[in-house]
Amino acid sequence: MDPRIRDVVVVGGGISGLTTAWQLRKSGVDVCLLESGNAVGGCTQTESRDGFLLEKGPFNVMVRDPAFEALLEDVADEVSVVAASKAARNRYIYRGGRLHAVPTNPIALATTGLLSMGARVRLLRGLFLSRRAGQTEETIEQVAARRVGQEAADAIVSAAISGIFAGDIKKLSLRACFPGVGRVDEEARSLIGYGLASAFRRGKKKPRRWRGLVSIDGGLGALTETLGCRLDEDLLTGCRATAVRPRNGGFEIEYHDSDDVSRTLRCGRVVMALPASETGLLLEPTLPEVAGVLRAIQSSSLVVLNLGFRRLDISHPLNGFGFLVPQDETAFPLMGVLWADSIFGHHAPEGHRLIRVFIGGACNGSAVNESEEELVETATGALRDLLGLNGKPVLVDCCRYRDAIPQYHAGHRERIEKVRESVSQVPGLHLVGNYLDGVSLNDCVRLGTAVAAELGLDGSRGSASSSDCLPCGNVGSVNGDAAKPEGGSTAACRIAG
Image (cartoon, rainbow, N blue to C red; front, side):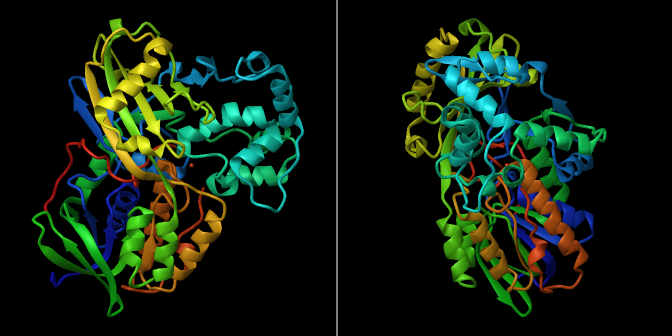
């Protein structure tokens, strides 16, 4: 047993755990981070291969939270933020065998082929005047149908939600997934009027350093790699926690190091930054009820395919962000496709294009079990006529994510509040992760920052934490606390445990 007693140990090196550990390190807290893999970042990893920049999980981020903006400021001397191209504003939805531009103004909405004439009228009417939410918790589909009509819910809303949660709008709770939108739904009869009034109240926006969609010059994995390296000797990779036990006013954490040797760490406080199921497994002896709730949270699985092509082998201009697929397009086997080098030009070498394909999700969870050859055949077969593919990919990168994105079904908020109430009864125990307050990078960074601030202010080892040390927050794509990809890695700061 290491005789040193750490102030805080963070278990899990995804974006939530990295943020928490880095913020604690900055504030002078003696912190150690345990990560079971050989590289930090969870899904947020990047690989450079044959001139292509391959994002394994998240591809870009909309900087919308001050905590995420502050994190970028922290690492600005080591990583360069890059903005998305203007072409990225062009977005499409697959419907009825072809791609339709997402309408972004009333004229486009009135003429779009995405919806029938009746559905267009219904959508416009709903934007100006529609029924507010009642007391009953509703799914995203129920709210969308009430506000803008069933056809718009099926064609537009389900596609958008697929790109965020890889989930089923018939099951996802609006108030849990998008609490801010839920508050608008409770207050506003006119969505257009509410938006205009809110803009008027806010007045002129405060200038921000980063606006719109951004990434990192070396990929988002460069951000997590930088945070890991800044932890220096306080980062232990290849170290899998096997037990977390309250002991003498603090905690003992057993783990197996990179040589599979069993070791023990002692600390005053511990932050669990693992996926819900893994957190539940480690908390079973201490909080069996909490463990049961966390293990019961359903998560969707998906596959991310990076496919590189010669430019001459694609006839479609790929002049946009890409397209998403509504969940009722059951005959089309893909969830969505991003045209990576159209968004960030440095993601493909000269004379080539890079396409990111998403397969699986809540409505096709078995896809994660298919072979790479089957997945590539599925993707190229679906895109051959749609994008005019004339040749085979010159590069294939396949990442499988099992149980990657937590699904915030009805009752999720209430279950999480009960979890927090129980956890607050164990002095020094804290939770962060994408199953709590949102699945995006913004959400995870915000929660990790808030928990680190609470721990940094509380200077006494093992002191009891109040339930409000885990503040409610608010949702992107595959995020850094999801299951790690099967296959694929990134060069990262590796420090043996």
